Image (cartoon, rainbow, N blue to C red; front, top):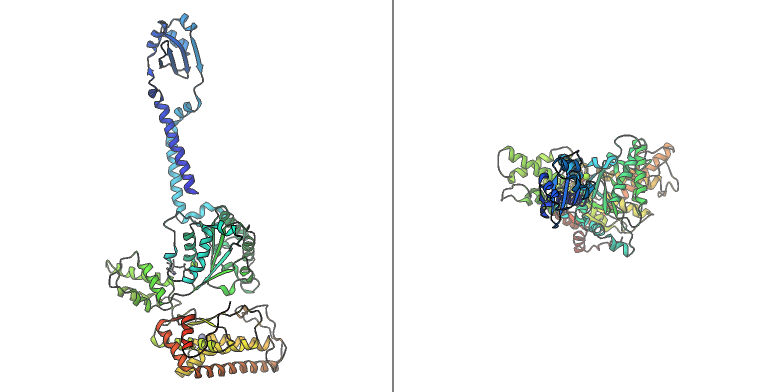
Length: 616
Ligand code: ADP
Ligand code: MG
Ligand code: ZN
């Protein structure tokens, strides 16, 4: 769009220049001879003229033989007077055909104004180019008034990101290819009557490349990318948030196909009425406006809304409804292969010694996000430069691992071999119990790469879309949750703090079974305590009003610990029975840090455990 208007302006300028040049030299081209007034008078008196045309101060005459000549007269005085002053015979002049024309509009004005116009045009042109360049940089906000969105245009080579600039996250890229395909060629999808994907939610830990990947989608598709951080919506005055959303979407629709990207959407998209944050009115209005915009798309509009969050658990369910952010893409922390690939990307433009082995660096950085790795490489470069060296060495890279690790938040990450081993057995415990128990969700991924407070995690996903959860399923989940705890106790005869989160989750499940779902035989079908209508545990914030007696509280506690003990025994018997499998999984985890579903299934299958089918 910009390119187009630039070309038009250029074309007009060139045309104007040509007209001016032509008007200056036109007479010369036609071979018109300029004569003096006295020559002219001589010709008049000799009776050789047929016609005189006066145009401003220009006099053009035609001789009897057809040749044309021109002359200049003095300003202010009439031609007749001028010629008679030079001695032309008044008699002859009166008989001649004298035509007076208005000076021809355009050329006359251009001729007169040009000397003044040229400097002006130069100045305007200069400012135009200057502001254009300013817009190109971060100040782009300023073109777009209200909304403060930044836009990255497809022809902006410097800011453009492609999929090849994002390492790893293959599954996520695969999902997003579909979006790219649609943006490149919306007609194909519309023609067949497909419903256009609307919202894509990128979820993942901080620094896993959510923002980067969103930009890469725009880069691959070659469409404008409107970027706005959700916290910017609400930073100023009340009522501004909603109108910014409106503005943003208006702009995006104008330049469709395009992408609107709302970063850190949890800042406004938190579960409404959750009680935290004091029911921020402004936030709610902003969120509502986003919902309105998402719903208000015409079916043929090709604007894709992308959003990113590292707290999908606190998002308002309204955002996740079909037709809104119904595509969800999860970005995991990179495993060793992916870390190596990210290292490769970030060392690309830097001078790195030939003997540097990135694999060695990747090995030592479990739990690092893409952003951490970028930071690491940068620290290494700074370190080398401070020592006045020309290149980055292996040692620089390894040294900066510690530097990044010692930063805040990284203290709980696995570093020592011992911790790696404990974590491996812990996660293997979860995964194995999940694989054996018929009522537990199947394992999708096991990893000892730390995430948040946990040393690692075992990702289980339900094999069916379930609304109702049975008591047997709860019991299975309890046993899986305790699997890590049991494994640590069994193998190391000791316990670590790593299981604390598991225990909290398990206790919450057990307590809900007793006090909310009536699943305890001793207590029966009674619900205790007032709960917010929180659907899952993450939102329960410990608000729990007590409306039962001490006596009942005692029974509840007993029932809860009864469920927990039962689950503990179940996990224990499984891990004891299959302890060779536990070893195998743990060894493999120590070796390669993460196991995808297929690799995991291969291991358990080799020990005669039937892998669970993955539904959904
Ligand atoms: P998030 O939005 O998930 O917090 P960002 O997209 O802002 O993370 O990532 C921060 C930086 O980390 C990026 O600019 C990029 O340089 C680097 N980075 C993160 N993930 C990757 C990746 N998979 N490949 C390459 N670089 C990455
Ligand atoms: Mg981000
Ligand atoms: Zn655990």
